[in-house]
Image (cartoon, one colour):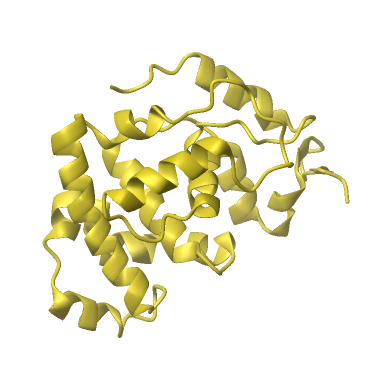
Length: 200
């Protein structure tokens, strides 16, 4: 299967975004562009955790519902959620009603608060694990860096942060540029990354 497809505008894109306009928009505007904001980064952590075992499109179509359910992923607000909130969210058919994943988001908010207190920022911590060399697109589902970040997060008490999930997070956050060669968005992401000031 080709790594790229021709989008409706006649330009090549990564083949995985062909399944719908929502995925095409996500591909063109978000995936791979560098993120340095702690709230946005925490949202990505949570959504990647909910995605585990499911398709990303399932999560993307429910993203607004997740944002409403989890206080727009403001870390302090999520950390303040209780067992009563978990029970309530298990009745919310607009999100993924999985107790372990809901509890994980709340747990990880607490862990994010601890990490920010210790390291200065969540984004600064995560970007320390960015690969020093460019990767080859479409050949990896983990990397030495995603394994290292996963291990460190688990040591700190985070959950749903296995190496594959963390590598997907790295792709989404722009720590790696995994757009296919020939994809028109690859160069846009490369330019955004070149002009990005890594958070500390």
